[in-house]
Image (tube, rainbow, N blue to C red; front, side):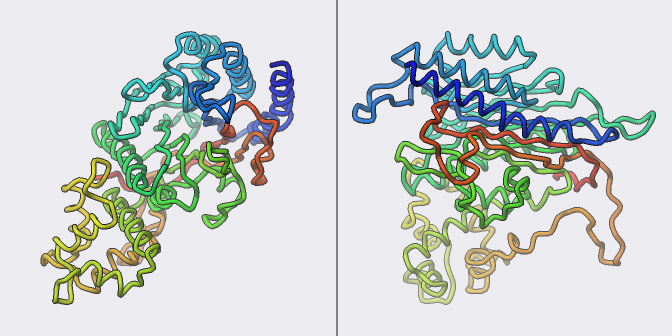
Length: 456
């Protein structure tokens, strides 16, 4: 215990010197006429019910040793409150332990935060906690999303307004509103769960879209925080990128989508290290195609991945979908049979009948009831939309004139820091004991930008 305490103390010192210093420097480094920055932190704090103390005895968990989990969580709170982010999103928050819940609620409350907690369904014991600082935000609304799936996962949606309005001029200030999501996706224990994880993100975005329409909201910044349990190579990452979201950490460090090994944020129970913790930003000028179309493209992307993993070429895949049909086209029954063979339907975690029909409608472009080779190539195997999607800003009409767009407020990404610092180089330090995840903090600076068209 003493040795562990010394490690925690050592790490706390490094936090103040490295993580918080870099963030504080970014916040201070703005010109007098610029709006104050806000900061956002996401951190999977490893619930004591999951933390193993003895790898030879998986039943030995930290939750059985009060002194251990209490000391670790006090250190986590110290580090969070030392950094004092405007937004704090925690995953694996031990909602099932009243003492720990009271500890976090008191410390956050005393520090000026409004906080919301949400446990996973079926009394899993852990859940989410989202806190926003009263100096920075006024909470306009709060929603809870229960996936009710095999992973008992949940999400939180906060609609907030910046406490300080954006100064447009001497007499005209703009209220800046933001939508914040905190979530923790299912771990992909096997390939059949990939569609579940994609589904969870789809449900989150449907919830956000419905909330915007229900409240007749104009496009505003959307920040998605959490443990996404998948890397930059995964289908979830590609799905979010197709919708215009950007990974804040990668943007801050000028990494491309192909830079999948530059940083890590998690060492999982299998001993593998990977980058799974993200703070996603969708600015008002980056709203892109309809959610349904991007969802279909994402599922078809998974479809193609599974076929290519089975060493099927484009022609082989078309023949596979045709099944035993003699015509040079795919029928709906053949399409559904292929989905079943790929384990995307036919079980409780798979696509529903309605979703399969929606996919088919996306593929059957001309609506004649079959999918020919050209439609297969354009809609399933190599959809052009994700490759050729342009930003909405500066659209040009058919007559060559630029569309006049309403101005709104978005965010630029000034900095992003992972702690412990070794993970920024793709390494996991053996002396790090706060969690099996790194903490990610991003600095956002409000800026004026053109506004995309409202979602219809």
